[in-house]
Image 1 (cartoon, rainbow, N blue to C red):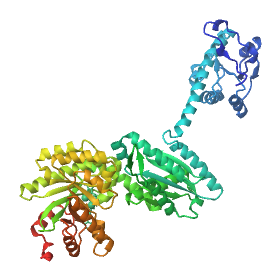
Image 2 (tube, rainbow, N blue to C red):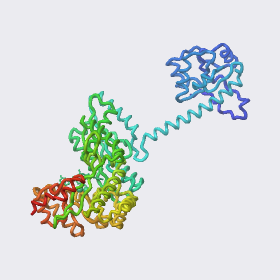
Image 3 (cartoon, rainbow, N blue to C red):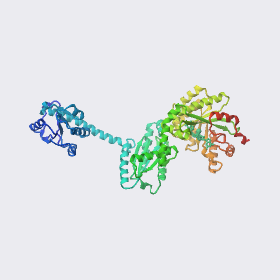
Image 4 (cartoon, rainbow, N blue to C red):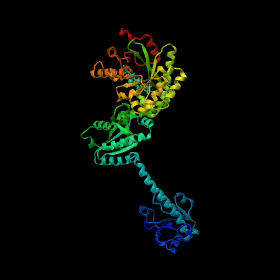
Length: 583
Ligand code: C2E
Ligand code: CA
Ligand code: CA
């Protein structure tokens, strides 16, 4: 554009008197009629080319700024002009295109100005150029800003890592290189667990700090030639060349990475833990960048489903992922159209074998897939936003059933599982209060089971919510106790009534000495804190006796009964077949 005439030098006031330096004007005039050529000759405008066909060379010249202006003779209706107009007017640098005697057609296609042929004069051309040039400058400026902006967007401003699109571009280049050098790369995708809940409960500034730290840790973790990116909210990716795995296997790298992410985070003096799930896939001969991404995400989903820290891609993961997505989509309707069922499992006091409670456990009677167990859909409900509706449904159904039993003179507590996302919602206690009010079910018979990790992921919120529930008279139980990292200091602060020793310890305590020691220790700890203890996973009479000897209060497990529907439960409670052996 170096030889471009600065038409803009003129102000609006002296535009009338504007004198262009015509010798600097380099026009591209294509197949122009005589009247235009004559005009150019008269005012001494050098016409670069007046017969040029629109070909690659002309296109290159236009792009290189050889011409200041394109004049099109509107009298010719050559389809080639449309192509010029499109290519010149659609992308920067924009230059004025003036049609002489032009129809609206050219203006619509992107010409900047038109002049009627009888009006063609130096003055008229100057004004047209002035206007057109101003427009083009504006467009060029906007285009420049847009490129700057998109470069900015491509870099995620929070973590300074490449964003999704930039990562894909970088990944595509690396993959092309890998294909051509017959080497291979692996893509590791990583998703933070329960990050949404953390963000909602602790605020976005807190969440942002965690994300920044995760990004830094990933960056430090990544080998020199790796590409690190942020794919979405709490999703990160790492493309590594396969020599990363020549020593360590994929699993070793995944374990190390998840260990790195799991180290404590200190934000504003508060300590938090975050875990991540990882999916890994290795490029094979036919993989496109999107194909590889798809494979690692499938592995990630499979890992989430199996609740393992990581998974390396296999073909089955793909099928599984599609099924999972479909289930997640079906879930909201399942909740409203009564496809959910509750099964109840008795909870028995050891001293007198009396049924003191039931735990409500949800199932999904899927129209096509049959009865689904909670492990298949609770994680989906949590990640797809259906957990709130599901919990409401379970609470309502449990409290109603509890009321029916109570009306028949069967007084026992009903336990409901509450996921972390719900526990951190400050309006949750109100929801419980409304439910109790409506049914008249006594608050002290409702027990909410929350996990250690739900508390630890946001101690202050959890404390608030649990305290309010406690004030209403609702009981709170710590589920899966022993599996998390809760220090007892946290528990002391909470008005908790009971702990449930996780079944993984109870199941094997007869045979594995370590497990027996853990159960014993947990029982002692709970006693010191004045909490009552439920042992879940009691499958046989030997375990029952061991627990009774250790002073455990309450037991739950297949030995007494599996979770069963209301009808089966009502029969069971009348006959109590399990007690016979104890006598
Ligand atoms: P959980 O809260 O630990 O529930 C106990 C699970 O252990 C139940 O599995 C139960 O069937 C099983 N179990 C009980 N006794 C024994 C035993 O003696 N041996 C063995 N091997 N297992 C036993 P289920 O019903 O499949 O539930 C799995 C998990 O799903 C529950 O674990 C709970 O975390 C979740 N869940 C169930 N219902 C709900 C719900 O309504 N809301 C939420 N948020 N989670 C739920
Ligand atoms: Ca439970
Ligand atoms: Ca449990």
